[in-house]
Image (cartoon, rainbow, N blue to C red):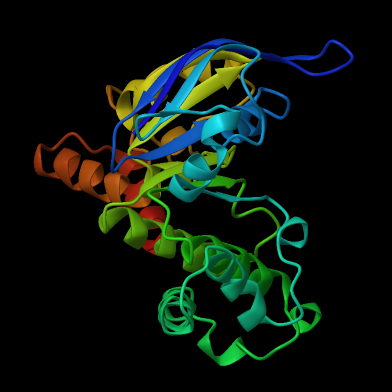
Length: 287
């Protein structure tokens, strides 16, 4: 679905944001792009839908090269959700904001209304359709920004730090929505540095360090190298550090669910010592 070949980009003033990044994202993937602040995450995402154009190298989405002549087609294939919804929503009401894109495509009113109702239900804002956007909470604005993008029916959804500034319930609601969209076949690319969140939802991880691709692969492959994670100014999920206290645990769990399975496995084999039993009590409290 997405192919990035030897991508380079330097901002005016000389800041090199991307330095030879190559990446392939299969259709239907849920990819987390991770890295510290300034690692190039947002810059990489903006190349996927043409907000930025490659200075060197190439980006292809759904068989279309991301360049000026293909801008409209690329934007129909790729929906981009900004980190701050205030940078994205602008219409007087929720209804107007969602309908803006489909109306701009010249769709008939009946089709626009069908899209409106469908995406409003998906993001749980049907009861807010006639509310002025300046009366929305931050979490509601975040959901509205996603609804406006979904109304364009993209094949790829790209999100820059989607859970930033959300409370825990808002974060959970949003991530469950993304997971459901992915299960329905949509390709999801999400920039984040939340290492505790990623293993719960993403299936692939791309790790950036100073504009270069440090590693890409499945969750186990990426998180199996704590030293690399640290060099990228990130950390392992918190649950993983607890298991470092148990001797001879070769594969650290990345989520509470994985932790429960690992503890039960060690318990059945009689390899769970006093520290492990204490962890089992802690893990049960977390669930």
